[in-house]
Image (cartoon, rainbow, N blue to C red):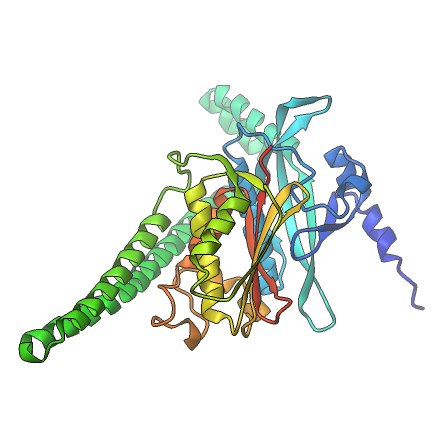
Length: 400
């Protein structure tokens, strides 16, 4: 006998804090456990961008890392269609009744896909567990153990340490070795890709110079210099991009200031007026706290990408969306398949012949744009464009 299952009631009854959000991280459902954990009413969460309801502790250096890891986990779920388990991470939660006082909490999260009938990811299920007490207990137990003499410590460990913990300790060296191997593999791949990109303009320069050396009387000097300058420009751009990607993750030299994003977008767009048919639709005086040079670099990368793939027109839209500014750059080209929308943010990726070396850069612009967005507590993702192409959406917190 089959029973009707009230899935809404099941979701509400789950004791773990859970929420459901759209692919652009808008909350569409929360259970009571999640609302209670946040100290908010359900109505204060629904329809909000995931990070909007929670005040930030500007003194917490781990916050940007936690946000970046959560964003990366969600994009892995979207790209693979499989659940992703995050390692416990630290957050600073405001103490009730005091907006300026924070306490450390540790959370373990599991992000799972919700699929449509065709098997495509349509929503995210985000479930968290507060593991503060567990981790604190382990830390305290470790401190007590260190105070025991060697004999007592051995007896205490034999009596209390569970098999699972011993297994975990045995696994740690193997996990560290695997992690190092993966890092070395990525480093080798990056070096190989970078070498390939640098070799192309160098080969072009060598070919032109050698031809001029062999047949000096046939050389059109102005034309030769134009080609040489073009290859030198390409080399300089690749090197600058590589240096940007190689910077430390915590760039203490970055100077943040209040930036009128509206003025920045309008100024940059004016420089592109003769390169593409550009349509602007911006809210006035949208202000963010950011490094203006980096935000300009992100916007130019999105403009350049849209221009190269547009059929007739590029659209730029700037809006206030809750506590965030939302900058969208859309084209009317062929678009990007959902399966490729995360891959385009990887280093040196070009999806097709349209993203060739003749028409585009080294395949680093979008990777750098994603890094800049993350460094500013923001996000960068791809949606369908109303004009049929791709729409890149950058979200960044408004200045307080």
